[in-house]
Length: 199
Image 1 (tube, rainbow, N blue to C red):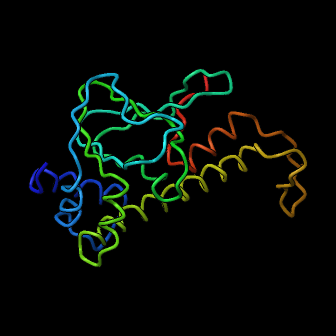
Image 2 (cartoon, rainbow, N blue to C red):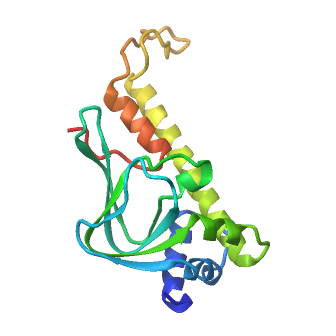
């Protein structure tokens, strides 16, 4: 895809991730080095447990993110809507894919290989800075979201047995075990997903 087509997508990504001081054209130039992939409904983009070989920018369509539970059933974590960045966590920490991402309807993504990302970010130009800042902002938002989830759990009393959240005015101590659902929400939040359902 060319820079002109990718610039509006880059502008939206920078806004969504609250990245300041980056020109959309510079991020579009970094994305332009990737490969455009047109996907059909149901086509797998990356699978849970795979090695992290690329990050993806969702340009058109939707992507369903799912993970298998302890019984091997696929559970939907999120449905991404364009534009969105995904698959980048593994490039940062080298971990295996934490979830599967599947096209929902006709979908267009730009794939930047791990090698391309490393090569680009090794430079000190504006394109490299734009890509670095987008990734850092995305990771920072994941941590912020996780902190919010933990705060909500504290407020709702979803804490391990015996964890005291009483205030100095002697309100009763909360005693409730974390559920598997609680842990799934936190794990998904750390990985950048928002669990939609635990059914």
